Length: 344
Length: 267
Ligand SMILES: [Zn+2]
Ligand SMILES: [Zn+2]
Image 1: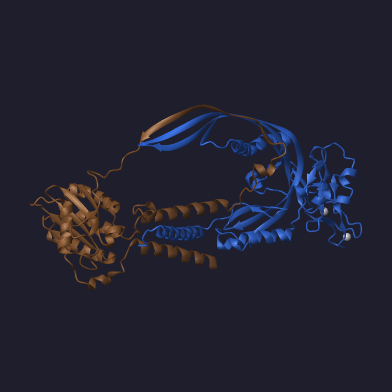
Image 2 (image 1 turned 90 degrees about the vertical axis):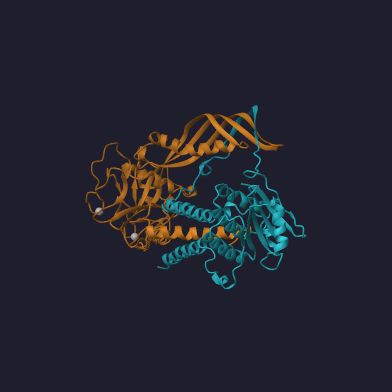
């Protein structure tokens, strides 16, 4: 049984790819467009054998498809046909849902150039965005967690009142013992499950529009790269808890109000995983060479949000610093002048 | 292309502003034409001739800018006259004033016999240098008087009288917002903070929070208690702010009917 799926156009035999703008599987040869949601996924009709696949061969040209172990969709390096490696998308690696790309390659490139032009602190040479060495659309594996938190908090709070009585300033401090029992549920908290991807970069790509989530079908991957997860939901669970701990703290302090000062004595947070869905989310990775250094940027394939550390121009930082300081100085002068200070 | 130039222009503007404001009044040298008045009556011989020349020139120059005579009167007080009365009599008899006789003047009187000092503001200076401002000037010059550094103390008096008259009556001239070093420092701190945030945010920022993923329907407080335990009270005595050495005397009216502000103390 062949573990490679390709999408041959029934009309002309060309290799079909996913068209991000139209949201269809389309043929570059004759223009045929197929609605993916109504398609039978070839993956589902396969009777897949439970044994390790040693080698993948392109069904178009027969060449060996060279991939990294986590790649689940790619293109044949000889003939360019879009291929999906079905054994890496089935069984425990079968994604439940996918957010398909809506920003195609050209649009992504345009959006990235626009982002570079708007860089307030980046060097002028960088803003032209003419050194892009690669732009790759990747379906990145994510776990979407539903987490249930049972929280118990003990704290001490004070309310302080200060007033004067005769020649004395009186500070009156009321002490309270505070107890809260809280329940917080987080739904569809995303965590990237790929070892290769930078966690901080992926976190900044949020939010992903969940209304665009579709039932997973392999044609969405045609023409793009895709990866399978490196960490399963149990392995990533500690990171999920860590990610929500700031959210939990913010929630707790929102329930303790009206105090001058609160100090926590005990915080018990019991987090349980209600559900974890394996999904693929669309990310454009852009590599950029500037001054002999390589910079990596990521773009949300749905919203177009760009993240990644660009080079910083010292001259521009200095100019902004001087400009903002000058404006603040003049503003302070005007304030002091309206208050009755001389302009000197 | 255009953006760095506008920013450099802003940098230039900042330097020019700061320089122009750091050197106050350098362009107003036009006063040199008017004749020099004798404003220092050093009957107790506290100053050398050179000190006298310099201080008298300073008093003339700064006084012209505020249209007020800045006068110093020192006395061994052989007749043992009260220092406030001495000041009032001097004003009635000598009829000083920048604009007219019995006009705008601020007078510093030194009674070397009783080691007392009195400051009085007449005319425009009665409001522009009210009791509290004269108290401030007196308390700032008293340490130098105690050390017998009279020239230094008098210079302080002349420059402070000039500076304080530049503020609207009623406001505190020592408000930190009016201080140039504070304005410069605060402007640089604001610039530093904003640019740091800009650099920090250049790599994209997190735009989600707990609320993005929170299920509002099932999240909330199940049980809560806010139990009052006790109250603690601390009492601190409010310090009385009387000036260093002695209390200020306040203003009054001269025998000739001129009202004035005033501040009195010893050194
Ligand atoms: Zn076709
Ligand atoms: Zn091939």
